[in-house]
Length: 449
Image (cartoon, rainbow, N blue to C red; front, side, top):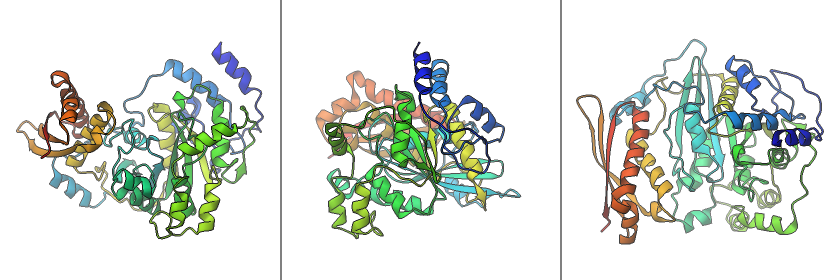
């Protein structure tokens, strides 16, 4: 019944005609038919003036019959990160094993905190190497992941969620939160902007910090990814969101979309503005033109950005769930096609520039963020006390957590030591997958003097 109602609703929308092209850059829609074509190295495209209703019907059908994929992007699941720091460092310095006609693409993933950047990076790699949790500021600094298949190498630059200088100071965040996203964009060949469409307060406009980054790097092609569409019950609303975030233009062509909902009421818009990061901090940054993020933008340009909700220079739009195998495969195939002739930057065995110890501490922090309330996980520090490869090729790791308050200690340990044991168990499984060996992880906690 719900499917028939959605079909009836979608037929009321106005669209132009469909055609297929391998040269235009359209709004990409993740249907099973296009995924099948992508897997056969054929990228089916539609012009930006057309958004097929099939995307909404397909989403309903797919969610009723598909589960989540553990290796959605089809990456080699047997690839491993070296257990030893020296071995990892040597691999990073090793000359790339260039194929005959190499292609490469550097992709910067940016977005507001908790948009799903690290989750998408993990899914594209087919292996969990980056911390991802429901809490903000899980990613603390830029890290890269490397996808190497056949003659193509994709370098994914995962960045911290964009924030403002005042918020970084207020929450005592590292300088990397302000500097790393901008540095990544300057090095990128393509920018992927993630937006969480499940957040009704922020999904109708791009984050102010995102707009600033895009404006400073307008010469770099950008694509929009509407993430977490599985959490959006009203799928046709994606059309309105797309129109808002692209200002009705994708790849230089105007979208032909009829609005499905009434314009946002005044009180709703005011509440939305209060929840949108960066709007209240805009005046402060305009008075500080030497700020790292706004250098290169005049006060007039910043004021103009404050009045904008979208970016009209997106090359493509994807509607996806970062944990859905078909969606991720579609995006990955797109990135492979976008790669240009050029020398590889890393050996094909490299998966990430993170050291083994960095991966360990990041994954443990992810679990702590997931299970501990409020500010508790943000106040904890870690120290790796033991990192030993055993004779049978396995890995023994011992980590000590330093806790600031006695009340926090009780929460970290949990009733009967259950919480800290759960963190060790789940983190150990993730590390086993990353290093492709049995990892025996022990975690203890003590009060910080």
